[in-house]
Length: 163
Image (cartoon, rainbow, N blue to C red):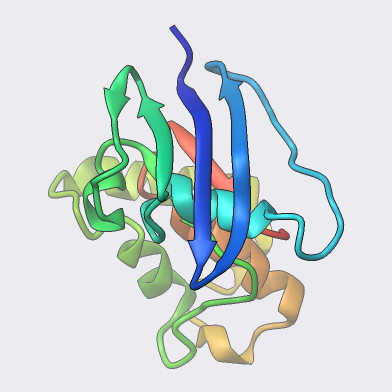
């Protein structure tokens, strides 16, 4: 069974037919890249998978479950996490506080701390700056932070829009 199955998905922005029957699968452990010109539907595809946008037609299954009608906040605990384009940090909060927000749906403090240490090991620069306000960091550091924050939710499927 595939981790993600997208089958004949159509999506619209008003009268604009943005996705015209897109279909693909993603298997566990697989890295998939969507490549195309501006306006090709890459972001719309990710928004549809992550529940930010409803498809007009088609099926999306994650771990065998139909997820078309789920809002994003219900997909995150199931394992679908999206990092949208841009650097969406909470600029008045520290690096550590931003990372903690990625685990907002979790109650297991010990595991959250362990996950923060994993993020710091992956992005040592964040460990160096854990007490720094995120709005004062460079663009590249902020991008590390949003990816680290997404990883704090323990995704099974991590969707990165123009990382």
